Image (tube, rainbow, N blue to C red; front, side, top):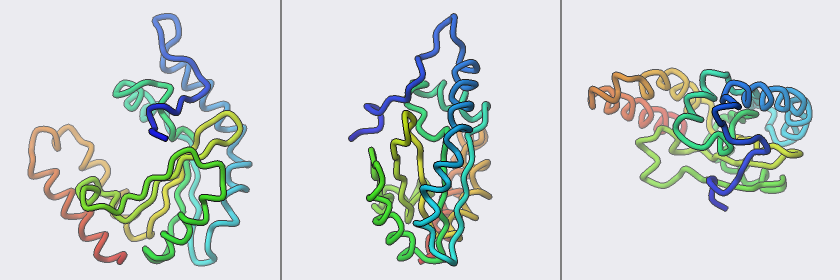
Length: 179
């Protein structure tokens, strides 16, 4: 199922209903579901791995909602399972198929190298009435991704192609180290 066909339970923004007000409702619902989400995922986390969960910030929600439909922002309630190896990540991602999966995206094709997500899995599940995102990847890739995110998404990257080239080089390095 394509992500654009998966809609969150909140309405679209209008002149009378701002993105910020929609976020408040989405944030409240995510807060209600967070303990259940964590409990649901904990059995899938290997002993030497980490589970991170959080709720998307208002500023991040607004940026994403301005790029696409507010109802297709699927990572308000989100998690990352960080493993020691790519093989372990692959195994975890496969096991997560037992959940109520609405989208399973293996980012292991060559076209994903430039995005920085090569070697990871993005899995969207339906939890109650909310679509939640789970990213599964080796911790080494996560570390590089976190350090590099600001560079990759900066306005400078839009103006200066060398910034994106450097960003892609960092992701490639991370993939080699986590292989």
